Image (cartoon, one colour):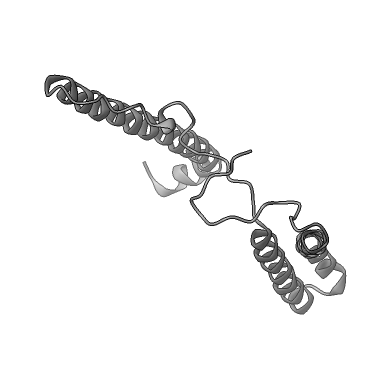
Length: 150
């Protein structure tokens, strides 16, 4: 195929490749998660069989087998500080870049991520005030990896 024929196909090829790749990545993630769970169940089953053969106590099934692979961790107060600073500084950087390159009117779009950052910082401040007033905040602070008994 010559180069001129390829020029006419390229505008149609780019979205098709993007769609196929995004669906392929999602399918790959599902398949990898399935294989990981299957291997975990297989290893745990072998462990149980060996324990039965030796007359040992059968280990209970781990709680991870019954829940999803991705467990939801409620954010702690420090997460809102980090998110607020990140969004605020990203918005500031975008605003300065747009102001220098495009002008003040275009730079006002940077107020959106800056607003998200300010909202997170506001929540962090309100949570800190409530934590000091009641002895426990809106979101319980805990060490990473520990589970809450709620």
